[in-house]
Image 1 (cartoon, rainbow, N blue to C red):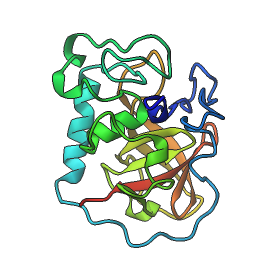
Image 2 (image 1 turned 90 degrees about the vertical axis):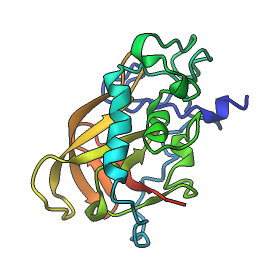
Image 3 (image 1 turned 135 degrees about the vertical axis):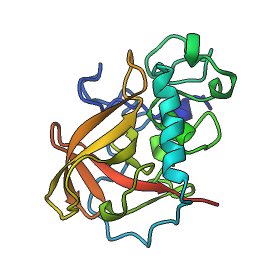
Length: 218
């Protein structure tokens, strides 16, 4: 049961096998659809400072899993998959000792990229719900290597692919790096967003909302 509490249920990606529903909704250990507080909030404190190398290092680490075609799985290598069912089995380039203890779901991917310890944080133990290792930031402060978290899914922000405006209501294209759902591998893609408020991006295709968050260096 202790492991179950780590399962974030990263099921909110378009086209997911659950149709965007969270398989752990209603379970106290899962990432219920409303657990990320997507209602309006006030402006956050000044953003945490970042080392000048943080963004490049985060994207480099994320792309190690992308290049290895790391399969999505809700458990460590050889462990029970609490999201998709069965056992997590990694082969080929995806089987590596330093990765074995990480879950390879959405928040496990963010945790690896941010150099957080295995098995990894969950969507509930990242900001805005838990601010011990990360903090909500404004869209204007969002930089490559920061993350987006909301509705049971988390992903790495890779940068903007278009104009520079961060005005509320503006539609923007961003590069996203993620583990998204059962049956897929780590990947990067562009995604269309609308800036919903000072700290929130809304996916144009399906209306999901994500808070911009940043790792808090110790």
